[in-house]
Length: 77
Image (cartoon, rainbow, N blue to C red; front, top):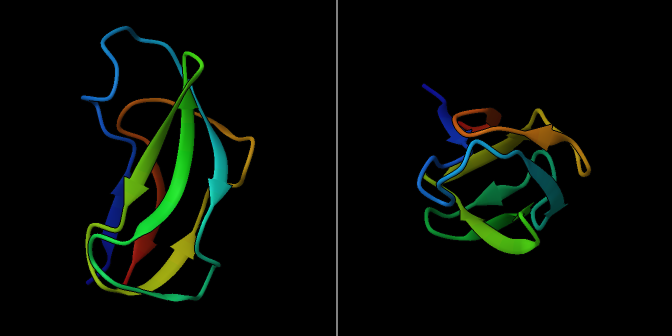
């Protein structure tokens, strides 16, 4: 069963949007739980996203996509 990579709701308080600024692992790459896999920009602050599980990364949202809290941007299976 795949684990979703979700934009956390606790990174910022307001209902502003975030932008995916980089994926640090490639689609199809093997990643370890806790590894840095992506970065997002929220209100001019860069935030790091860590892998919520170990497995193969499947990216569903691309760099420069605008995302909101709770959005799924990929999975790890």
